[in-house]
Image (tube, rainbow, N blue to C red; front, side, top):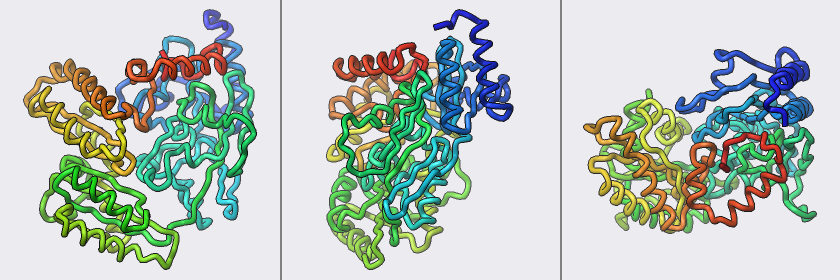
Length: 477
């Protein structure tokens, strides 16, 4: 490595510029700021330049030149991550490699229910492309209008429909990846069965760019939904929601594609900070469930099933009120408070935010117990504990007491986070359900991950990236 040779670094930067052409790179603090600052605005890194390749060959050339000079490479998609995983964080010569110009859908085979897309494709655009072909691209995330294929794969994000379709990992048939030495792993295929040795794509999914740069992916598709029914239901408790989940899955024939739990604080945060959101129910409730059913069969009467679920849940005292969307516009309005939570939280000012999961069967127990335990530690805190109850993932926010000094709160947050993580561990859960590790949660990973897992991860990193140039300072210390 030649990281102590400024002349080699300068020469490498010049060669990268030449390889990319005048439109393929950006430099200067002002012009590169959005690539160097994390989405929450908490941290800003330094970069020699931002490389914006438009092909896999250009990406490989950039990485090869950087590797020869010992320059660190930070892969970046939409830069919407929440754990400082897609910006420079280490004090060494670094370039950001953005995939935001790699936006081609290379192929779509509707009969094979498969699509191949480049890393810079925005998830929402892929949904539309698939729908135009009568197919469903099953990933659905709150940030789908800005997050990209590469970033989503790198964190193995889950989203709102995991209960029905699974995490990002489960949608992937194959990958194309630029390795740390600039070679290309050619693993794109659209086969459902391919039992020819190690399934290497899974090394890169969830690796947060520490093992290579994903440049394209082959995805499975689904039949497009023909019928979608959506309801917002008011409930007295998480325990009622837990019972409702089982009822909804059984009575609908497992047609549930979203089951989002929200305390009143979730709806109120959106009402207070996002324009155009209205409370769909006349009387406030302590808890809500956003329930959505979907089917690709035009002869499946989901409306009747949803009405039966609503009726039986009401008779059992599980549901106290609710509304079923009559139009697509009403459906969007029901979803908006849930989808706007990241932006509403950003405008309100971040509290202690955690992304945790526990077994689906224990979500209600976890919510009730953890909120009580956190309130014991600090009186008058407020909670926004909402998320994907159907897959066990809760986005857990604790906000400071109104009267508390900000400095005192800042000093106290880590103790609350530690207690929450201990509770999650005791429940057999994970402190990072879908946001990843990044630079922010490395110490937490070391505390809770089994030593055997950490050892194997370090071995893989050392073998695949022996010079440590790929996204240094992320996941592993």
